[in-house]
Amino acid sequence: GDSVTQMEGPVTLSEEACLTINCTYTATGYPSLFWYVQYPGEGLQLLLKATKADDKGSNKGFEATYRKETTSFHLEKGSVQVSDSAVYFCALRYNAGNMLTFGGGTRLMVKP
Amino acid sequence: KAGVTQTPRYLIKTRGQQVTLSCSPISGHRSVSWYQQTPGQGLQFLFEYFSETQRNKGNFPGRFSGRQFSNSRSEMNVSTLELGDSALYLCASSQYRGQLDTEAFFGQGTRLTVV
Image (cartoon, rainbow over all chains, first blue to last red; front, side, top):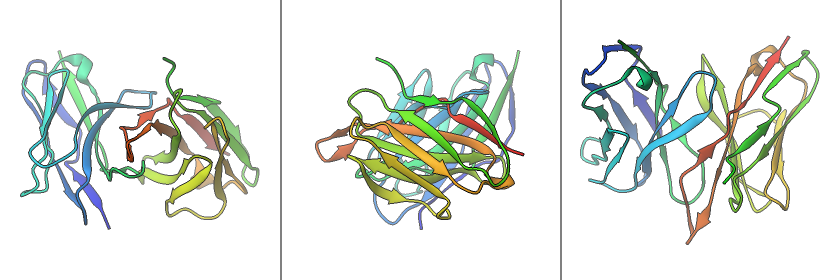
């Protein structure tokens, strides 16, 4: 079946450092890919998405490119802030239906 | 536009009881899906409803059930609660547009504690 694998955390960075959170997937078809963020005590917020190969999703300084050849969707940000501290989830979904398959989540901690 | 609303936010139940959680989707969204989040198993898909019909179902026992009403509001029910059912239950809604679902928007969740 389909699956998503993320790098384990926590990832601890200093403010203004560069961030990369790795995400790879296994899928039988051609899913859409998503990054969601979860702040303490909250639900999930959509951070960015990509619906086909070579698409780049971007939002709030975060970027991720849908790489079909490496089945990856790594999350990147050039300069993190303390307010970026949260848990980040990579997920895939096929277009028909709303069933998301999530990775295990990566906790990011940014220190001032 | 109001977001996805889940009630209640917190719930404490005793083992063996049953519980019903409610989810009101974003206005105009006809698809509602439910997820269970636990530290050990992460985020797992429970089921999805679209126009009052279950469209997909995850790998959970029959004690977990759900339904959707004509106004797209959804409820999930867990019977004969077990300690392992303690989790954050998240609901998400999406809009169906041109044979495709748009991205899912999540509620804040219901934190269920079984004692």
